[in-house]
Length: 281
Image 1: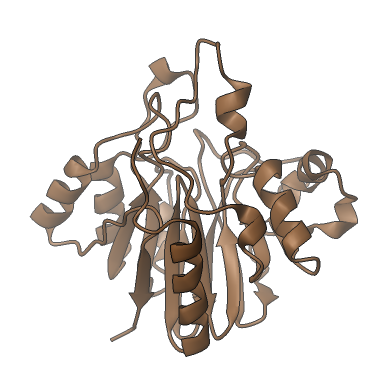
Image 2 (image 1 turned 30 degrees about the vertical axis):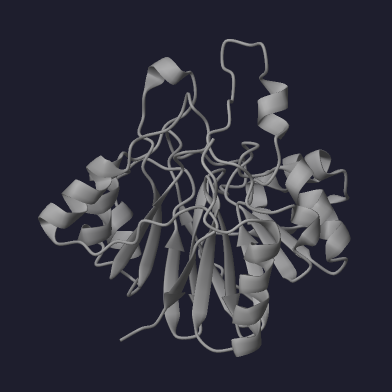
């Protein structure tokens, strides 16, 4: 099993030291599509998966979720998180065994997901729907210094509820003069680039595990597609994710790196638990 660059106490020490600095935007890869983001003493967690719930759920089935990378940190120790966001309802993006310990460690923490998924998320987290924040396309949502904008995602297609709210979403996050784009799980869809070019994106966080129907799960961009999308939307840099977590649903980042290099797209290949400091030049 792969060992994260920083684990448990070492990871927490890095986070706390960064928070004391209180300048600039920093993010850490938590594994899969999970990221911790800090600015000015405020930390948010995007799609955190910090448990073995899927490994247990799918043990002895045709789709075993065998872990490839050890957990970065016990979520119960992340007592600095004031917001958790979820891009969609799949467990590696909406994990009760991660979010509930986070909530216990941070009683005033907020949880936000697409307005289409509030009912499902409330049932999974065993809370009233009124305790969750429903995010809506076209309506910016503020959390401290963070401004969140919903963008659609296609996993594998775009889907909406009866009210027209997207079931799969990405987030464009403006904070500290920096713009982040976390796509959630997505394939390419018509109009994607035009929508994202509205922002000057500093870091695009994109999945690279690809779309293989033989896996029996919805797919994502592959490495070549992710690097190409980042360049097309004008992202200053791209961080790949959604690989090296489960053996049956991963990809070698070498293809992503090779294509990004070939087209001149800057990228940062992080190890689980690694920090990236973002400065707009």
